[in-house]
Length: 74
Image 1 (cartoon, rainbow, N blue to C red):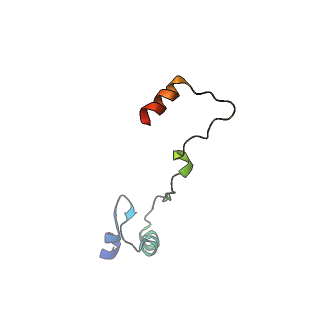
Image 2: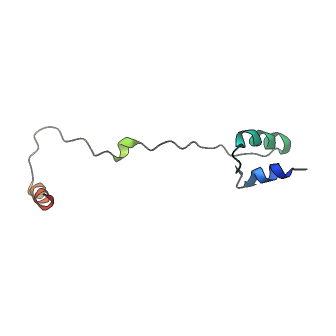
Image 3: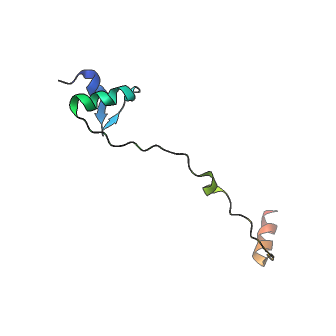
């Protein structure tokens, strides 16, 4: 029979809702054969993804759109 601690620890969508899940998870797996989906670790987003593109190389001439944009915001 499951104890109240086990039932409270393993409640919804196969996720542990207790802070001490590293202790509870193996107990539930051993006692009751509960299968847990593998947890994916969240990694920080790639900081370079938000960085502006590198400046163009070579001889780049200013277009009329560039001049208009610069005048509009200066």
